[in-house]
Length: 97
Length: 231
Image (cartoon, rainbow over all chains, first blue to last red; front, side, top):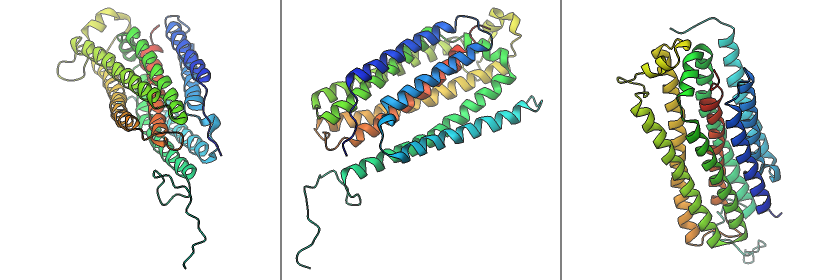
């Protein structure tokens, strides 16, 4: 079972994409999109993170399924932390003074 | 028993006795790092949650604080980290192919980018220090109050933004410092010729950590610098 070796072409392509997305997200922040500034910025960040995880961290080519289980569980716990807490704070009018 | 049925084959000196083969050892190491990164996600997740909750409550102060950051230095630092991720990814490839010299060059470049990130971060923190934006006894946001009168800034709430800013970027910078330390060791062992096509797990596992710290910054950058700039 030989491991995957990423080509330099792929690595550089991912790098260029990440650099372009960084410039795009910084430029978009100067344009007023209302609430969509947040949406666009976080969508671009998530896409960048996905590229890093899949290609730089070799998850796309990993033969070990347990790795994917660990990653998805970690994200699931994070979602529990964020959504349940925000649902709590969002539905009460408690302003800590 | 005089003649064991277990043949003693070619045995890599890096193989620990409790693993069946090199691949199993590598998979176990990587899984261990992924589990650690899972705990790190929760560690940083708590800070991101605190940031989101206080941003909902004290929106104006968070917008003003965000606008007071230097977006150009922030963008430059994002670019520096992405470059370091590229050199790590190429370094892992060099180790897999057994190219020792190339691996050392790429690891040294990674260290340069990592220290460059910390340097730029230091400049940003120094600017905040000079502007009296560091929470504490000398905290003063009268400059922001003058600049953004429409936001009705309450200094105590503004202090919350900067507390979270320094806690989050500080924790991230601490991870960078640890990463630089780890890569110093990796570079030393690469120089000694320890890594090759058969054994390069430490390069890969340290790389996973480095990429994770990069990903944390990929989220810190929009949340701290970008999303409230146009308010």
